[in-house]
Amino acid sequence: MEKELNEEVVLPTDTFASEIDAGLSASPKAISSRYFYDAEGDRLFQKIMQLDEYYLSRAEYAIFDQNKELLLQHFADQGRAFHMMEFGAGDGWKTKVLLHHFVQQHADFDYRPIDISGNVLEELESSLTNELPSLQVQGMEGEYFEVLSQMQKTDEQRKVVLFLGSNIGNFRQKQAIGFLSTLRASLTDGDMALIGFDMKKDPHVIRSAYDDAQGVTRDFNMNLLRRLNTELGANFDLARFKHYQSYDPESGECKSYLVSTEEQEVTMQASQAAYHFKKWEPIHVEISRKFDFETINELAASSGFDVVKNLRDKDEYFTDSLWVAT
Image: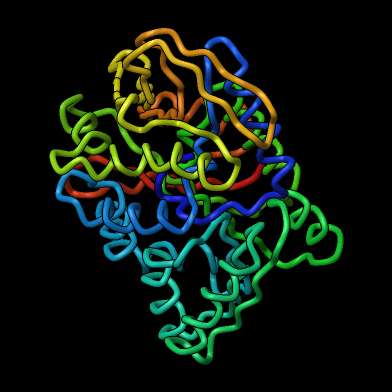
């Protein structure tokens, strides 16, 4: 999962264990990045966002700050009411730029963050109640598309869906089209989506963002193994693994691995299984694709949207692409 979606994923231990077991039993080995986020993972991610190398959050924040009035004009479309809905809002740091402006302009809207974690929603609602007491906030706990589908049946008001932070980069092209097509099927003609895309750029800039000089990203990724030890009774020796980052400027795929530095066996109590590692065998833990405008246009067209506007930061590192359902 892209680091912008910084929330703890709480799943039943048996589901957690079965997915980890499947990933470590596979060839090649892989663990979903959704499992990065326990309390320590959240703390380390907050530290990552403060790093000079990690440009993504700052770039998207700047886009919102520079284009908040333009976005309101498109969302409201001559003053019409709308629901602003956000997938995986986290602490809402960037989104609050828009919320503050929309409230100041007396826009006719409400804010509906959607998340599978009720705790995340409670914290966000509490902070918004303090900062923007006049804002109508309705946290919606559940899977994204289940919530949207239910609303489509019961509410005809325009929906504007935010999917920020380049979380779309966690999907390969076919998966992304499937995700966005499902989003489109949950919307009505004229509804909108604002989607964050991390753009292709100097490969060294991208590598540095995911492999910083201080080693915070390394610690963030290695914490995944620590979490498996704590919660699932695994016996990973973190000193026997290394964090490795790769970026392919042709495909735009940035990948993270945890690599075994020696031949070894790891056991896990929750699955009652042992996993053999060859020397230098990797566990794939994250993919974060980078985009160009040709790919963005292809995604929109293939999933039932038209591109309305592409908004970029001054360095042209990041794009928030505004789409309309057609």
